[in-house]
Image (tube, rainbow, N blue to C red; front, side, top):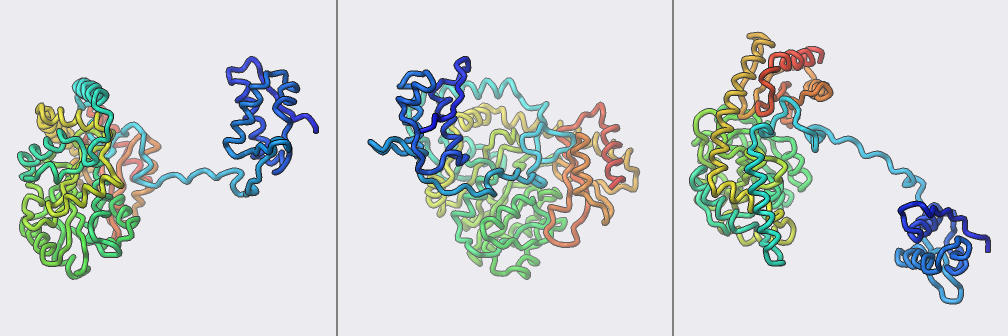
Length: 468
């Protein structure tokens, strides 16, 4: 038997047995050692390499454990049979880049990026203290599985907050803590009887919501919104047998209008009469810059048709990955069972910190400060954008963003891509629409702006838009 060529480095920090194992494994995987080939005995190999026999034995035992080799008694150790390597898998292609709006993940907030809270105004010191206290408490807790619905302290606190701020009265048993809004949406899509059914979706709507419905095997029927929100009569004409409506009634995303009371009552009446359900995405809660936010749609629900979803991503930080769902009383047990099996609540320490943040009054004070700050920044951005674009520019306020309309032939996706390369991150408007005509425009977030350089940043953005 020819000696097995193995190079070892005695000065390396990697143990010798690890080096021997890696060298033989590479020869097997790369098919330089054929299936069935006999390996030198670990005694012979140790003599060849000048190492202790226990060193080579440990390497061989690991190869056997990983089913790369077989110990066959007197026949020695042989290379195990393996499926032939597919040449197409030898060099895996690079994963394609994510398209908008996914490509910004893990990137520091760029100017004009919508859907993010102000980084410079978050109470970092206070949050660090509460997080540390919660982490210590969680570490000292009994070693048991946590409640998959979420920590009871947070669920009680959410109930108290919703009763005061959103006019919604619920019990802790109805509350399920989720990984943000899409954790709540995924749970609802599993728990409700929706298979193969149609879903009313606002037009425009957040593109990720549309994708989530598609992945769930549901047909999203886009229904245009007007100044009063979702046109329920039009929705009934387009999809009378729909099983679900997904809406943002308090502040329509992205246009910002509130659903009127007649439309709310019509939506609830449709759901009650047809046995359908409504998912209320209350993504901004009471963070309303103009006056007080309208009460939650779920506060009007008397028949258990509304699944209410809230999130702390816009009001506190998306890094928390924390949201919550309020299940109708008759469905609370089903939602809890599905959460326990498929989508249990996130880490208890973060939940406890958020519960303390709300219970001690910091959350409401934070929201009041953010309302003043965002209103001031929106005003400053409106003035700077108007001065840079001219009085004929079509600029409108949309919740925590400004909408800048572009000509019909503009490529807002290309403009947004060029803006990212220039350190700016407005969102293109057209992907929010599913049907033609898709208005072209840019959504400019007001939360993360630099007021001292706002005029220059607006001029840079408009230069990119004109080039498109």
